Amino acid sequence: MRKQIDPLTLLHQLEEAGFSRAQAEAQLRLVLAMVESRSPTIRHLRLVEMRLRGEMQQLEARLRGEIEQLEARLRGQIEELEVRLRGETQQLEARLQIEQQKIRAELEKLKTEAEALRMEVEKLKLEVEGLKAEVEKVKIEQQNLRMEIEKLRLEMHQMELRLVREHREDTRKVIFWVTGLLIAQATLILAVGKLIALFQ
Image (tube, rainbow, N blue to C red; front, side, top):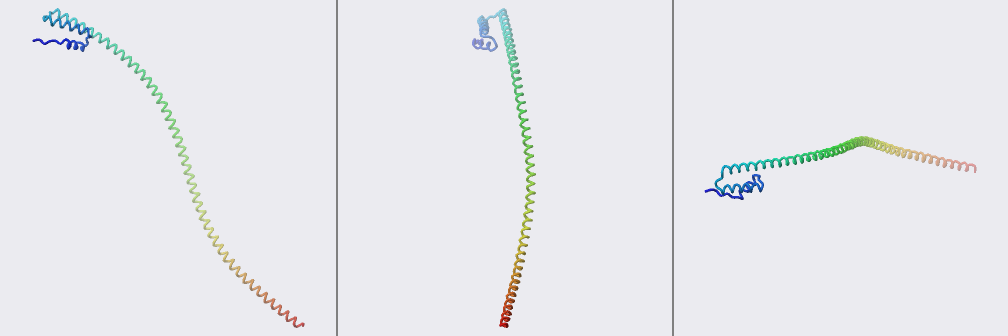
């Protein structure tokens, strides 16, 4: 028992093989006619073979042309893409160079500022060292002043004691001198009184 042919399945297979719709339908009609006759001759088979070869050659030529067109389009697109990428790459390189120059300028500026800060710090260190020396000098001078003040206080105290002693001594001498003077005046008065008494 022969297997029955499904025309739709065969039609789809021919289309999937690369035949157009019209070509597939023509091949399908030919095959169905051969099957229905049930006695395909060698002439029919050769005719089918020649027709199939012709269709295959046409298909190959069409595919070759489409492939060449596709390759040409791809080459054109690739060339356009290369040109565009080359232009974008050049623009990107130009921007990168500009950015690198800006970065270098910023780095130089930062280096200059850092050097200025370092010099300022060194200057401040020197000033701090100078201030420390001044502070030490002031401390020494304060210590010397304290010693001088203590010395002056001691000298003033000694002078006060000496003045007090001298004042006491002078006071005592004045008292003795006044007392002697009073005694002399009293003696003189008595002598004068006696003289007066004698003359009376």
